[in-house]
Image 1 (tube, rainbow, N blue to C red):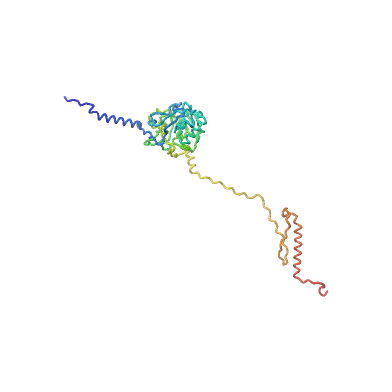
Image 2: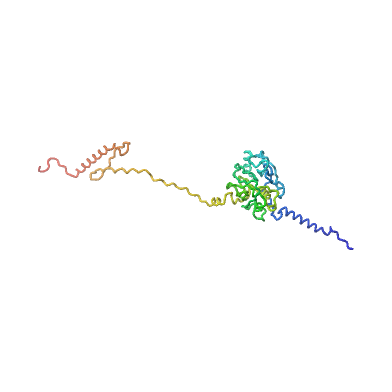
Length: 377
């Protein structure tokens, strides 16, 4: 009877191949998810030390993950920072600040920050830091203290659906399924309430650059994911509801909320290399701003004088000359009064008399003067 070969000897190459295949499959699964795209690769200049103002929890549901999944969060060092401790000294330990307005510590109210804390956050960005703002399902908040203030329309926790559109292809989001920054916007709107309950911007400040916009379940349409440069730093606002973050259905996982959060942290800053192809203004306003020609200022036409000018003075009377010409005019002395007053009339009469006498004497020069008798008389 023939001996049966040892199973171990026969299956060793098969086992090795199987193990390799399983490991490769797990790696692909970790990178791509099931049928999804890869998470964005780390970028040079991304966040490293991240301060969570408040905490990572969200009082309205969900949370901001600090550990994997998604893969890549292990690249960041997270620390909680109480709103009362936000100041320039404490912020100096971080390159990125996440303002989680919906955290228990902030209780959906930016007013929990002191005025000095708000000033410190603005200075932090201006000096080259990155500020990421989340206010999931919070009521409208006061963002007037930011360098570029804005207001929002907030539907609250309606648990509805909406539509989301990626406007700019960049390192924060992409429509291309082959791009490592791909975000599954359609399924975020139809499979979760992230879009239906999102807060949208209602202001149109051109300093903000548009990444994603949409319509929530309250039929409020506007920008929901935007960014702005200030000084050497970068501000990102995310108005999406995060109820499903960390526990998304598939799809949109792995290309949904968690990936947006990861790519915000992986986004470089100072410089950010973002394109800002469209500012947060309506398309009509953008067109007008780019094609409008300044209207020239009208030049005022001088008005016609309303006063009737005085008639010119009459010409002076001619004076006789010895040969019948006009002699020099005799002008009355200046009186200091108007030129047409009666003060000069005597002088005018005297001048005429003298001129007449001179003319008469000159006229006699043309005749012989007789003395004595005149002929036969």
